[in-house]
Amino acid sequence: MYERREITTQERIEQYAYCEKIKARIAHRPHYALVDTYGCQQNESDSEILRGWLVQCGYELTGDEDRADLIAVNTCAVRAHAEQRVLGNVGALSHKKKKNPDLIVCVGGCMTQQESMKERIRNSFRVVDMVFGPHELWQFPELLWKTMERQGRRGDKSRLISAEPSEGVVAEDLPRQRSGDVKAWLSIMNGCDNFCSYCIVPYVRGRERSRRAADILAEARELVAAGYKDITLLGQNVNSYGKGLEENVDFPDLLRALDEIPGDYVLRFMTSHPKDATDKLFRAMAGSEHCAHHIHLPLQSGSDRILKAMNRHYDRAAYLEKVASARRYMPDLVLTTDIIVGFPGEREEDFSQTLSLVEEVGFDAMFTFIFSPRQGTPAAGMPDPVSREEKQVWFDRLVDTANRISGKKHGAYMGRVCRVLVDGETGQSPYNLSARTKGGRLVHLAGDKSLVGRFMDVRITACNTWALFGEPA
Ligand code: SAH
Ligand code: SF4
Ligand code: F3S
Image 1: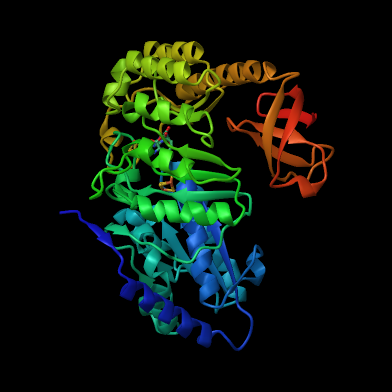
Image 2: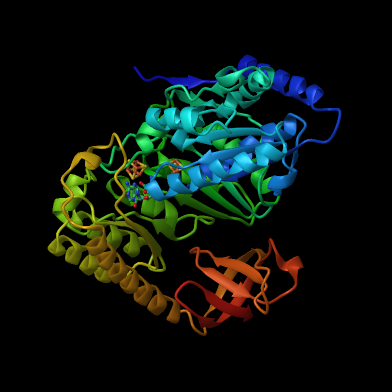
């Protein structure tokens, strides 16, 4: 039985006590830690907690591997490509360890939750001192302390390979080093119950569990008070927020409650499973002061046959109906999506259905992937006769279509004045600042860096497939 488990205050205090022990142990000279993150926004958010713990433990954060005394790699398992990059980079750390034998290498995140991958790291990546799972983040200090205590022992006794099977942990009030001061992640739930047949996430992230609304609201109030202007609510499927909580609250209710927090800020969220995107959600978005009129609504395929095999619980008609309804409530809606090409058994006619649906909807941006078999998922065992080369041809056609459509969409912004939030510097000239429209479109502009964190009106003067370019209006 998979149960929700809330971390108690006592358990949290114990972790802070481990931080103090580590701090004392490394106090004789400055120690530096580097956190390397792969994967989705959920992982970026988790890495902020990792950095929070490391700072509590007395480390200074660095971006320089050569300087680091500790390197923590937060991994992603969603596609083979992500895993290969991680393994390549972790393997390369053995050179660093030769130079600095005291270097501690920790590997966390989704990859560690696959038993076969854990074994592979144990046996073939001796450079790794500690392995911990995503649901063990709350006890990182304890695991790190125990790893430190083992250092210098012989062989495998010097390492701590944890990453026990996933639990339904909900942990509040963990320390966090946010990576910016304009944009903030706000995780509202963890895990996924959908089991799309291609996807590893439910296996590595565990069952879906939501944070209490009061805790989310308190964190959002803190963010607004601290001056954050762009808050993104995170969950694998935010639309099923609230399931399993004692209180009777769903995602639109949560959005409405958050929207009442006074201030000048934008609320975003991702991701929305189409099967759970309701008119109630669209109404809440349309009636809200702060919510961006943007939905990332992963389509995955335009073929009913493939959608069924993917276990997505909607068909082409239902998807189109959701989009039409969302646009009725929000005529200015920005719509983005994810698509998988080359799912097992996909044929030319299925792919054509995807292309035609993409044309019909007219997405503002699309994230496209070639199917990657993930061990343990149903799709990995399905017959898959289409070659990688053929899939690549489909993929290229889809990307061309996506680029043409988003280029056209961007063209429609030309000459318009948009309110944007300046969110950072690009490091390039002449467009040295980056900004986002409320719908989330990227705008480059020239201006003083003191504008970062400010809302302003910008006239769009140029565009390409990926971005808009503008000047102060
Ligand atoms: N929970 C989110 C996103 C999960 S992963 C959602 O449901 O939308 C992000 C995207 O990666 C997915 O939307 C899907 O398009 C893609 N993806 C997931 N598993 C994949 C696989 N095995 N092969 C290729 N793409 C995959
Ligand atoms: Fe994966 Fe589907 Fe869950 Fe998204 S909704 S994380 S694609 S199982
Ligand atoms: Fe990857 Fe885990 Fe996110 S598998 S996409 S980091 S939930």
